[in-house]
Image (cartoon, rainbow, N blue to C red; front, top):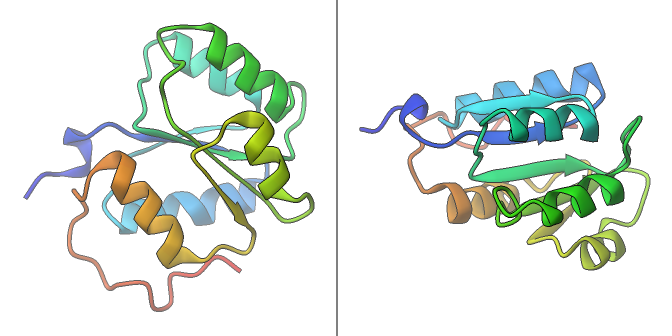
Length: 140
């Protein structure tokens, strides 16, 4: 078994403390390492100081630097430009934003947890430890 610490983390960019905490708990339960950021500015700082995630989960509703500014800065830096991006939102249409942001995938919140897990597995490897499954792990 490969432990979560042996794999690249997921970078979760979410400004809501409650949503961030719930997502971190779920991702860790599924066996993934997670690094969090509360804004696009915070996420770029973490990426520029050496954090190399397997995937970026980006909320479209961010303070300071919005998701479009974040993605433009990410794509301009060859060291982090190839990190896949998944966007989500409960207020905006993530499908339209995903096209503009050249995102790998998009999700409406609340999430289809099974579909999100498939995207994560694709980009971060199926290195999850055996967990209780998806039942009861939803993020409403």
